[in-house]
Image 1 (cartoon, rainbow, N blue to C red):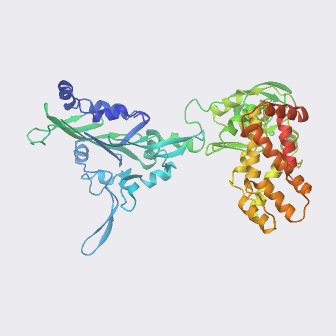
Image 2 (image 1 turned 120 degrees about the vertical axis):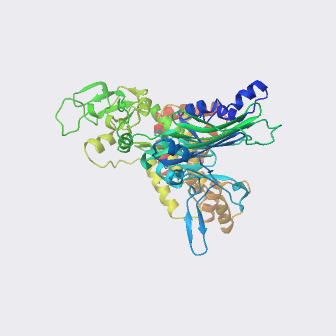
Image 3 (image 1 turned 135 degrees about the horizontal axis):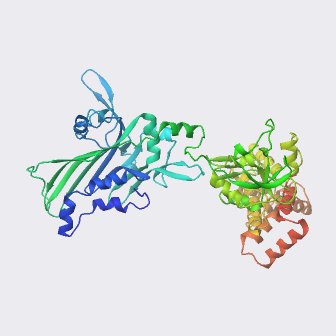
Length: 547
């Protein structure tokens, strides 16, 4: 099933108006081919409640499909509104499973996947669906209301729909990623059983069934049904489809231990890198088998062979701060991967080591490869101290120092400043590239972190308590000045104390807050002329606040 375009499935519910098409439709010759092809899709139908269509799925222990088991399963009487319940007799009470009265002995030993529930105390929950909790735990899937799906993070850190509810005026469909269900089926030793009921008739002239026609047993390798046809009037069929969708356990075990799940193995990119062991710059694979540690005598490059990149390689991780966590010298992608270290050298190049690149997904390795270039200057001083000399790097860096102090200030629970967002400091980074847009964006982020943290209401009340009469137009920075004046600072000194905040706020307004014009261009040119790069200019701004 195409979860983004369910038209093919919905077409099963469409009653033809043409008489010839209707007569063919009543024969139900399209049902088996549809089920046979649909079970091969990436997402498969678990439940469908549409006009003329009913499909419901459960997991059952592995069975041999002989005449006895087929006849037993064809007796199914089950739907998702069958729930766990308690049953009471005159002298005892017990819990009963949702499949205990499903009409089939084999089915009663199965595991229900979907549960239809309702709660009269909440109109929004007049009819809602749950997935067997054991399945959601094993697959680590979570319901997201805005996607109407049970979701998880894929290996790229993106949200993917595993079980999806598609609801419209026609009816409801619930589909599931077959690989995910196959994973669970393999662990639980079960097969997928789909029960179906297709009832077709002319809605404007249907008066029920007279019960005269005999049912015909239809079957294929894994689909069996009883079909009753009234030519030109209608038909109904009830059947089952048994599918072994289990993933081989050997593959699951390899996946669990992080090993390649295909015979071709994991792919690795090559990079222009400085093979300092052999004193050469050349193209080297990041495949761990092509690298050596200090304890292995060989001519192959060391694992910590550095590769160098244009700073634009980091822009991707700034553009989606919800997905990526960009630290001062590491990067992580939510629930997916982690780059242990990177650094910036004097030439503004980003550098990291081949062994850490090898731990990224191949697609992520290719992202880095497109920015790969020859080294323009040596590794950063911090990288040399930390990675080669085994020493703590203690040189002062204003931005991390400022962030650390803001965290400490927030923990003090002062009333005049609050950290609006616990992740706000992690959104502020140095501008690594020569892009004026990146520079302006980081100034905006820094201003939001610092200036928007002030509690204007508290400051205004404090000014009044100090005997000052603040104007209604005064904002937080002006109110701070008034507080300082209220405790006997002269006006010039008060203005000097808040000058750094005024500077960053003015920069934000001129570079980001309004349409950039000639004034913004003049600021850009002056910053580059005075500091040489946006990075150095931003470093200078950090110095102004870290006191």
